[in-house]
Image (cartoon, rainbow, N blue to C red):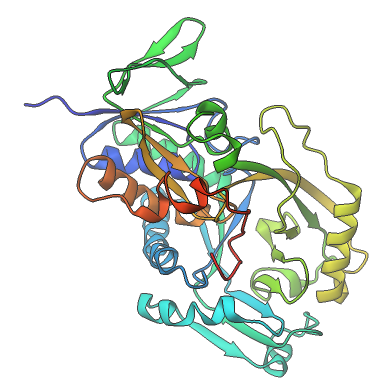
Length: 393
């Protein structure tokens, strides 16, 4: 009997955890390492919730991956007996330019993801708690909703352990590269770990671990602030049974939100990229001016929540690539090292599909997609930072 391939996966977030799980299921011996544990508060995959939606402008690969991820999320819920995916629908509110949504429509149809256009009048009738002033077109995506992020990271890591992998709390850094291969991981306090293959899926720390190959030019961490407001007592209009996940593309800044959140409050966040952030040392306190702006945006769209108290906050980060696309490629100087990251604020939902794709590629069952390569033009030509909602992405 041949010895299983030993793969060390560094980072137990959405990408690393699901990749580790899929590698286990394909017969690899897996060690999953994370410096602070799955779903920890410094991670890009931490926090309570993330939106899952299929609209992705012209980028068909992400629409297809969302369509693939949805049944995998449901299967995971059934397998582990945990609620992870909450189907609320997603309401897209657009201004005069709705190209981002419209260019997705044929891809959604191909993928079997239902979306319906609503007139502002129909939208007001269906969602009377929302003020649609300034909204020119509305779309409702039926299978969208939100995911329980921190819980999911912990569940996936537990799944890795249950399916034969090892999950370790350890701060791993790459050791020496010799003869085109990484020799080992340095775990601190004199400990090391050697494996056949290494997958670095460590989110905002990826650039720092590989400054010459990635660095901030290819992945930049930015500060993103999230606010939870308390709805009126006993008012069901802002719970997930009555209010969908929403994304407002009608103004200069893009706000989005999640109702209910398992009774944590009405979540509101600004998708605009914030200031650069060190994910290890940053103080996670919110900025008063950004709180005021979020409160104003919420009051404009949800008048009954004007003056609602702030009940919880969170400061997380996006790890952004210049073009908003993921990064997945082999290290140019170490053939046994794969680099996976660049979620750019939109990757969490794709975790199960990315894990399948990454595991198949790492084990040689498929070729990597050039869209995610290290040498793509956006990386090599110093392109300006784009977001997931830019029509050109």
